[in-house]
Length: 104
Image 1 (tube, helix red, strand yellow):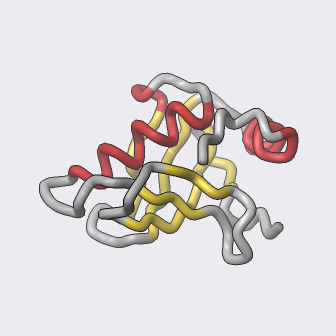
Image 2 (cartoon, rainbow, N blue to C red; image 1 turned 30 degrees about the vertical axis):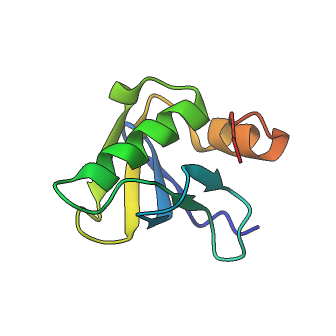
């Protein structure tokens, strides 16, 4: 798995994810060929999909929703999300050990 989607930032970690709105269910796949993907039920209207993305990612990583913010990609399916207070190594550890709270 390529780890280009995990980058260090002064405040924590930047994660780049591909989002699919209007899905039949909410889920995250960390091991995709082209990096992590996220599916959310919410439509891409009035930031509903962005909010759902941040909520699902917070649950998945086991962090507070307040620790996450949309860094770029407000209107794009490719989002870069800032995770405050974590290191790239902590994110890699969660993903590699399967302790991300991932639900399918």
